[in-house]
Length: 157
Image (cartoon, rainbow, N blue to C red; front, top):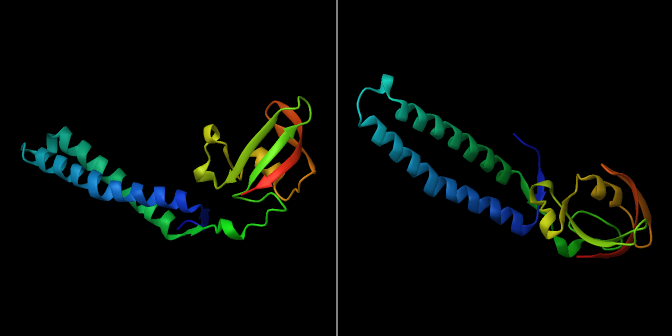
């Protein structure tokens, strides 16, 4: 059993849609493959049957894990966020004090991280260094390239 994980409404909906896809499309497809392989005769030397049964086992394990995640999921109420500090689900604008560049990130649960859309995991080094900070605070954050100093410019939802 996994622990409680927090998701945005959008993130939890994506997980539920994936589960529905696995149950309504993938599961019947694999059952059909097993039936077709079974119809081909001797199961002891039937590689198609073995492969389909293995795929079925993997799918059922994935469904079970996803059901467990959804069962233990909690939605973060973004309307109740304290926007005076950087927390999960806040959008933060930061300035790199070395080169002056400005970046904007949304701090999200690890499962929703997507750097291309500006969403960084709450467990990432940058997010960890920003959590709890207020506008005007400076944060020295250790990243693979070394230590970078950032200033919190803005916090939003």
